[in-house]
Image 1 (tube, rainbow, N blue to C red):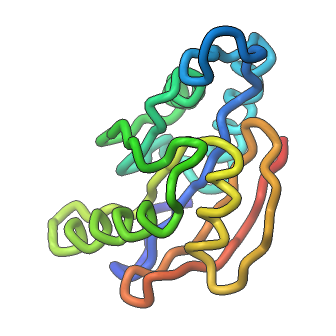
Image 2 (cartoon, helix red, strand yellow; image 1 turned 45 degrees about the horizontal axis):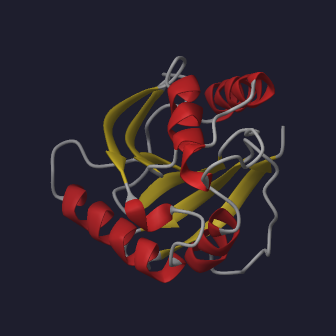
Length: 170
């Protein structure tokens, strides 16, 4: 889809990391399995086919946990991000309201620039992604996210909420 959002609308892609290995030492260090890497690639291709034909996003917020970073690494083989940021607010036990406020601040700050954020990817974990999706949408969906699934939200910056457009459960 060509970039034609109004300054008030942003496409927000909320993604759960791909399948990870079982807990061994600590949760933060869990790595993607080979299947998890393949899942992330499938989701990236779905985004390209449906929302990112130019293979670009403006901003990626990524949980600092290894499996989320590895998921983004797989996605970024096919989709480039103009800016990336590791974000401690989007870890599994993160506060969705706090993260929503942060995202709003980022969106608002970029709207006056010549290159505003039009598409943003957030890569995180359950249960955070489910709670965050409900936090940013007008109508809560109580969605569960399979590994490497992606919810697409048309987010209105002025109203500070969005509408769920699609939920890819690869």
